Amino acid sequence: MMNRSLLVFSVFFLFLVAGCKKSEESGADSKASILFSDNNHAVRGKVTYDYNLDNCGQINLITAVKEDNGDYAELRLTLLQNGALAKVQYLKQNSPDDGNYFAPHLQTEKSFKISDFKYDKKGGRLSFSFDGKVFKNNKPDSERILAGKVELNSIQYVPCEALIFDVMTVNPAFNFFAIPGTSNNSVNTTGGPDKYKEFAYNVYSNAGQFLSLRLDRDISKLVGQEIAFDEENKMFNVRYWEYIGPYMLSESYGPIDRNWKRFQTRGKLVNIQKMSDNRYGKPYYSGLIIMDIFDEDRMVKQAVELPFHLSSWVD
Image (cartoon, rainbow, N blue to C red; front, side, top):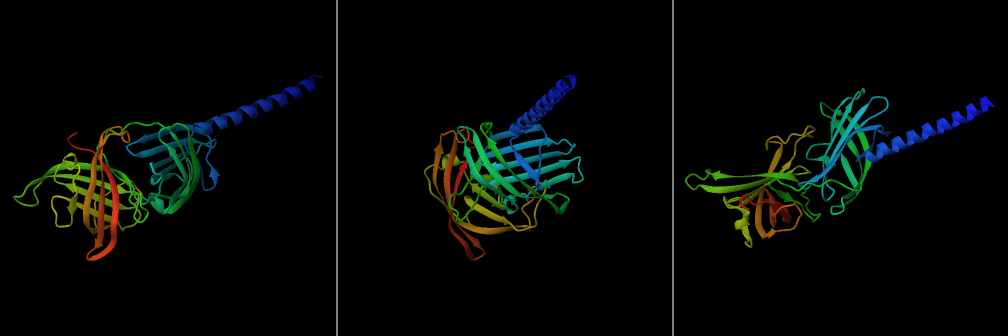
């Protein structure tokens, strides 16, 4: 009788342990913003760190997992609000494959792709799938294949407090999806005695492009105007480069040098207006750049449309 009771208790105990383990695994997965596999191995274990944030036009996701065998894996994904991929960084520790791995910086989508992207900003719901290759920083021939999915019912949102320069095309004939840019204003003295105030807005795309918008007055003073520009116009111009160098694996923008090809531009700025919606959590200005792009005297793109949003230095 006692043996039978011990048998029943043992079976019940094993069932309980199995149920708790399954619950713990399910709970751990539920805490992870990113569920993923590494070279077809499902990375599961204790979620030691998890982070998600929508800020300044970027969606940042981080999940760190310590597996039962002691391996540590941390995956960082950065996307734009239209689903374009901006950055992938992967860290492995406590394994023979230790190191930092990256998708190509500023050209992430050359080795990685996003699919089934859905984002309800108002409700905070985000979902998508991903797969692609990342490369070891100091050994570009060492690669790993990552795949997984993100399903979040509530993503954190923090209003943007930085100065904004955002460019996001909608016509697939020419794509430019901006990684949040920088701006500055200064007195331009390159014209000799003809000094003038210059407002410069610079931005990289997620596909190896660089755009610089130069104005001789604050954007708030240009509402309702149509402004023509070309290479000879010192006061208003748009400068455009494309990256032609080898993969950049570390997150370093570096100088605009021989690895960047400069193109010539000609066009106009139109539809400049002040906006008051809560897209960025602060007032901003919108407009449209319409331009032709030349490689010396040869036109390579005609009537490219670049919708932009930017902040005022005055408001």
